[in-house]
Length: 271
Image (cartoon, rainbow, N blue to C red; front, side, top):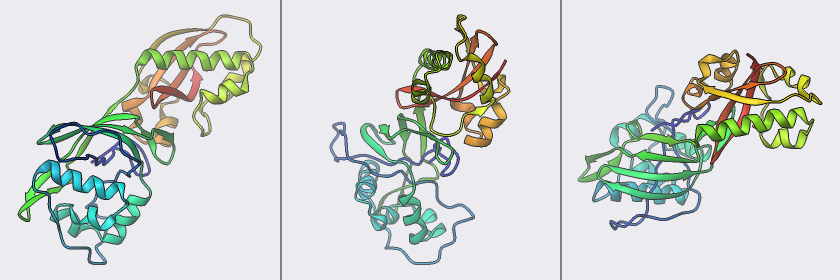
């Protein structure tokens, strides 16, 4: 399962659910999101617990997610399909679990195949890339071993990002904060890493008295900052980045990334 990013490259492998009834699940505390397994870099060096199963696809996911919530590498590892368990060691799986994103809440919206409406701890940084605040997770399960197991390699995530108009508002507020030389406001609207692209251009805005206007939104490939953003966050940046065109003392492209229910500025360049 994947989630857009770099590092753990976040086309997430999200796994969550609770309760075996048909009723939707509610919020749970902070389990982790495992990454895809079965890559060539993973070598099986130790034997893990014997495989276990769930009685139904939903039960398999529920057992798997309960293990994630408890930090139980043995339980989660044992519920992976045979092919994925034989491709990685329990030790590697434990390390994978320890360093990946977390989710805050979820609702089961479909039983077979199992779909989940998930709320994650959102992130924007050069290690994780972009972890969405909300997503629909499409779990893949396989019938084997007398029951059902989870296949992470075939599980996918469908991120839900905030609206483009919110990105335009954030970009304009950020440029205006630079115009008024308000470093605190600038920092609150910008991601925590180093501003990408041509950050020196914003210095020209300080104390400038003209009018700033947001004038259109486009994709990442329309701005000179595109390469810098892809290098920092990975090729998945093309999926989430919104470029806001700002008219003012000099035309600017402000690149924004989704963070939870809003956006943050990650790059700027002359247009």
